[in-house]
Length: 444
Image (tube, rainbow, N blue to C red; front, side):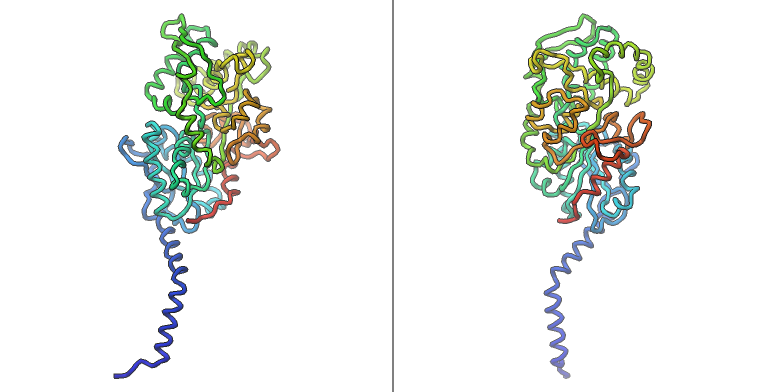
């Protein structure tokens, strides 16, 4: 029998030694390859028309296209309330805009997370967390999240879990009501209608519309009532309109302020530097000098009826938000908060659903320094932000981000009121800019 030569044995041992030295690199290559194929093999493509979401269903991740993740950063789009039943979860406009840019395609791959946005967050967030953790375990990548509206509130709660916190590098929120909204405080909102409107038709229409909507969406009341961080909720007691079926209720601070939301905002303070927050507001007559409010409203009445009230009956969202914008602007507040003035309009800047101050997450000092911020105050709020950074856009309503465009703008380019010296851009080009400028890198 021929013996193996010493040279062959030596070569074999050297090869084994080199392979052992490189096992770490080889393992990394295998992991990278696995991560690059997960996006194409594990997650289904996002459905154009999703099937009905059952309350028992788990949150689920979809991919925008079947391309490999490779060494790109996963970008997770998270919809708002009710988005789980809309085409592309109502996030398709954002995805198309971002994907159109080659620089974005080189850096990111888009995914969608579908959760039950029609349930209370106590029920939906645990499943959302499980989906995020499972996704991270599969792709071995830290992710960036873009969350619209209620999705931002869901992410605040999800990040309280250390596993989710370690899996997410950055969160960009679009119109997220972090502190809630006076709109979701039944007695407070109806008291304001009672004091601001004397037309029986307005009493009946607005009160009935609100009650019908929130009877179908009761979870918004529990999750998104104002947390009263600014101390503006008044102590009124019982009130009742003389109009049948008009505004009525029992307005108290204890019965209105959302203590649970306040607690969550306190507990989540350590995650705030991961957040870039976007907000918008609609221009309305109350932004003019107080003496002009009455005449302007009178002169605009015919235009307001044809351009706002009539389209509401046709189911137009933007028209409904224009009406709500005025109502939120005039919410009656604690008169002692402003030296006896109950007309300070602290929520003048709102997008038809959410005040700007709710989206920005101001510090307590910010509320003290600017109890009723105006347009000219916005750049001055930057030192009082409790987040990484913020942008605020004029003439943007709550669904503008989901629609990927601003309503009724002559120019497609808008400015950021928090940074007025920056160059104007299209609405979602601001988002594209912040994502590309982010120093987030794909990693474990």
